[in-house]
Image 1 (cartoon, rainbow, N blue to C red):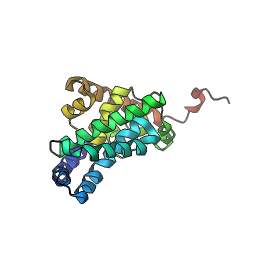
Image 2: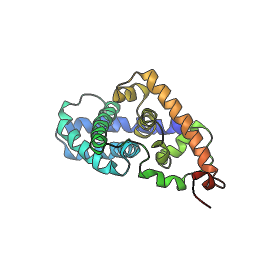
Image 3: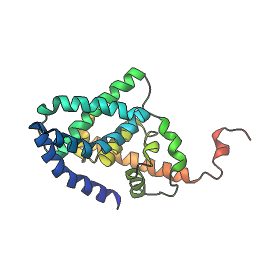
Length: 205
């Protein structure tokens, strides 16, 4: 299906999401649950790429804040996706500051063994990403590239929305996304060449 299909699916959700958010703001708790169900998978994927195994905890903190501040949100479904991603990002950065760790090389790298090794193009990198298999590799990208790719592909934001979340210009985010995807394609290719790989990894024997 590729990137386009992924984005179209997200956009189809956004109508439903916007309606659910409006009902939730009017006090409908069941509608809040619908909004949660639509947003949580992408949000969790994004957080896994930044904080690894702590994603669930950080997401819980983010949702408490989202629920508390819901009355202040103004916008449609796509806007809500961006707003929740911004809150989740702040929670994630707080978490990392407390831990004093770089958001790279998370426990996700153990999943590398599961990765398909044949991807050679952006589209294939995106394809793997959308199945969640390449999240481990995203953790190895420079942070701004990782975040740009995760927000665009996993959360499903468009360029300007991702730029707002990151507090950067859209052109800069486009560049980061492009570089990140190019690097991902290289990493996916490299993962395919494991036959003679281990000897170069500094292991003896």
